[in-house]
Amino acid sequence: MTTFHIIAERHVSSNTPAHGFGDFPERIRFVACTVEADTIRKAQNTAKKLHPNRFSFGGMFGNTIYADADLPSSLRA
Image 1 (cartoon, rainbow, N blue to C red):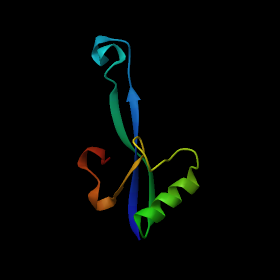
Image 2: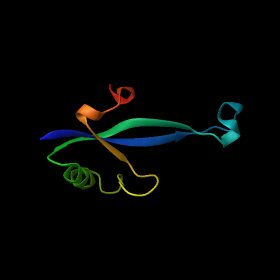
Image 3: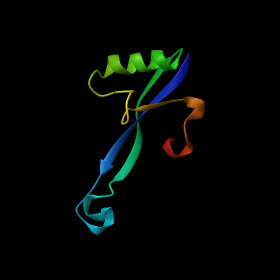
């Protein structure tokens, strides 16, 4: 079994010069869910069963998934 981390992204934007008056939102990436599975696909299925309306792994704005060994240092707690 491998530990997989599902990464979500949140956008923070205010109507101030710090965010370009809303044109340049700040993107905050965080670990939204951690599951154990044999493959990436099984980890995606498990995450979708735990939170049916929260995760989407396809398309332009889908969640990303990393194995524990491949998790970037910026996302480690």
